[in-house]
Length: 352
Ligand code: IPM
Ligand code: MN
Image 1 (cartoon, protein in one colour):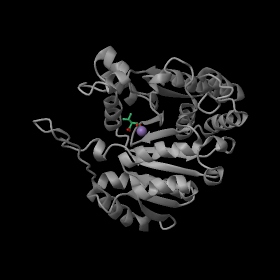
Image 2: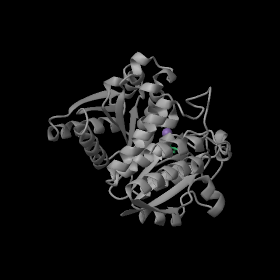
Image 3: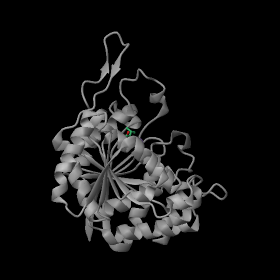
Image 4: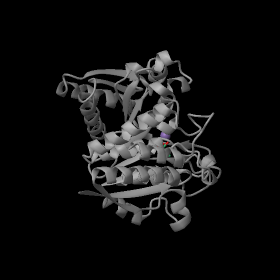
């Protein structure tokens, strides 16, 4: 029997509810395929600030570093958003964790489900067959660049976008390798007509093209890509982009699937990887049992596949497909006869 140590970081808002369903599903595949999970829970985000005064406590870092994989829910709490003077914010926990654990590549697959095509505000003729993956750089760019802050008189604020060739190369390598396993088409999204960092991105990726002669590479400005994504999403196979463009474009891309609650992600570096839904903590839904657990459950499937448990990962995907096709879904995707977070999790487990 294979045993894996999983760090479980539930976080804020709906985080605990959706992670509980992912754990239920992991337990179910574990029983079926003889896999054991040894969970350690860590605090992160607003709850960590309230409990121990730090959004990414040292103890949580230790748990993550000792784990084979990290399953993460969501962070964020409006009580911090509405207080611009707050010294520590939940989001700092997520950013600190990405940086400390070296999670430089965020893999965000986007695929349209045939049975949900009618739920997207986009026409079926546009979304049908859409299937691409966004590789978002995760530990550089304007999210982390220095200097950042305010001028002394407080009247000016600044953030700095910085990229090194090394940061671009390592994430681009991952994107080329992904493309090799797919339709061998890579679209690099940048703003090279304006930004120096984007020009370094282009130059760096262009120089790598010769190492992957089978991959067809094109370069697209981010404004154009934002339009193309909803005008012709089937155009894309692998999209590679910097931190903030990737953040924005993937929320946009979720419209293709019909709900932000469907999109999973994996964040990878050289050591332990982290699996999380791309959505946030949805504070308005906290405790109501209405959050869609599928993005987190699919994140758990990605985790299993990366751990080498491909059969178990596939079993989760097959079960999710079936439950989606049945329409056994939460209110974001089934407003007429909605099921609760727990009911959807249980149904997926049952199908497995
Ligand atoms: C995401 C989130 C985070 C980000 C926030 C919560 C800091 O929006 O994972 O996409 O901007 O990276
Ligand atoms: Mn985001």
